[in-house]
Length: 67
Image 1: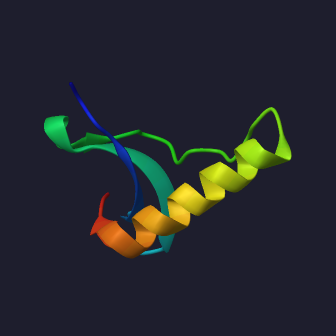
Image 2: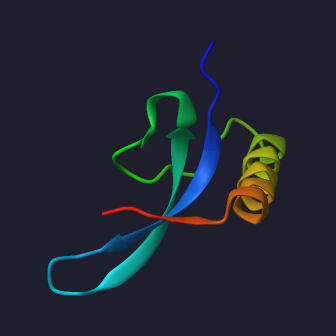
C-alpha cells in the first residue's frame, strides 16, 4: 500500500527564476505530482483540513529541491 504526503518543492526555471509549490509526494515511488496541488473542497472544513495537513507536512518534511 502506497502512502503519500504533501511536500514543498523548490523549482528552478531555466532562466534561474525560483518558485515553490506544494505537491503530493509518493515516497514509495520516489515521485511527486507534476503540478502543485490546488486547495479546493466541498466545505470550509475541507479547506481547513487540507491547509492544516499542508502546514504539518511542511514542518515535518521540509523542502525538496525539484526541477
